[in-house]
Image 1 (cartoon, rainbow over the protein chains, first blue to last red):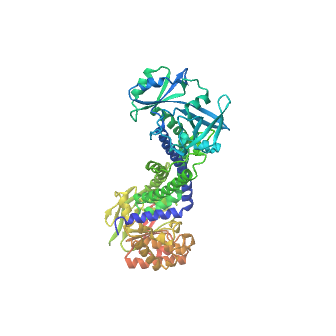
Image 2 (cartoon, helix red, strand yellow):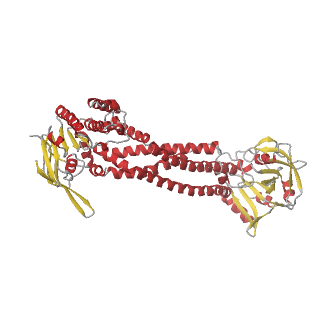
Image 3 (cartoon, each protein chain N blue to C red):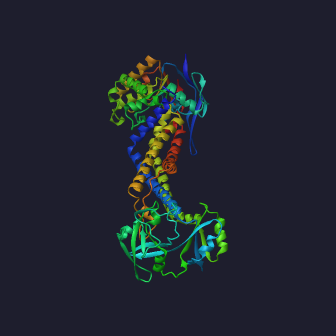
Length: 397
Length: 225
């Protein structure tokens, strides 16, 4: 027998109460479990999307330069490339011609790069293909590499030809020479990558103009002074550094997650009200039980310990159920509806697979929110009952 | 004579809005150790209130209560609880049994708040239930028991921690005269076996007749002692 024997007795009594009040316990676990499942799914998706964005940012330039006039972006002169290359800290400047195209009710992104200067062998910039080969700078006809979403939608394979109408409605043919596989599915899913001249022809962009200039610097995290130097050097341009590009991507998903946090907060409020209603519903029985226990020599702390263990265990069960549901819903089912909302609506949905990742933070949030409101809602009435003299409670029976 | 409990000019006043009720009105009594005492009087005379005061279930508004010569009215709730746990056993009417627990669990309750292992507590409880000839109903829910059986569970719960003082509030109110006699016989056995101090609150002549000492209350005051 140890000095913990009494506590073990109290915990067993509390555990017995959970079993005795099965209906109540089930209702609490169901309600809190669903709430926690919803929040945890949003968190899993947001963390997964952020991880994907990080992968995308690994491929994005350190600085992006766009032509800018009358408050909107315009094509930029490609001759600025040599000027920018002379700025201290600039390693490489690559012009791009890109734009969106619609085909068979799907929206795709076509991007043209100059493969004679694009460092395909650079592991940080190199595209990874699941099938086929890279585009050769000396191709004698228009070729392209397509994302998995494009391949799926057009049923194209390596060796297939894509027939796409350009912005003037003229059909253009592209031979598919490769299909992307990247850590970042969001980045390449709807992408059609081709050489810069094919893209120029497709978008009918005059010679000497490109959509934007991408700049890589000698340091992995470019000093903002490089962007400032470029800004001083060239007029009428908009300069976006990597941090700004990242923020734009993060905000697009985090703000949607924000809507869910609001919805979730309302659900949480509902949960707290639910807990208090449970607490009120049980208070009569509880009051009688507490009065009797006090008469029989249970102290206030004994009673609080019983109630704490009883509802902490219930809350932990509920959180566990909710968290497990979230894992099943998000990682196994792919978070239907919720994922579409978080990823945004486009003509070509990204079949985003959330990377399986359980963080301490997500566990803390799920279990904290699954137990603390319940404990507050039940411990306070228990305390109120426990501090009353047994005589007063027994008289009320 | 050796007195285990005594009160000195105790008052218990309840307030409800503007109404003030003196449930116990300047009561001084002495309870002899190892004897049976019965607090009698008509309904509303303050029997239960006095019993609750003596059983340390509430504080008096004025006056002092002495347990084995020690004043208890200034003791904290923690000490009062400890004294209740160590010295008292309580028998109430059957509705004071917890309906969600079975016979064994109800009777074992006082032992769980002590540093006694669950196994030992269970064995001790089964022993008492066996002495009371109700050990064949250990798994029964309270609703499944007859009035007499429920009263035996009440007795078992009061005796399981081997108290020095047994407090019984209207023990015959929900049982017939045959069961009352049976109940009194059981109490008699334990009283003589353990030298128990037994304090009843009752207006049942059967219960009153069985006592060594009688305290008669009316309107919260002692009429005769």
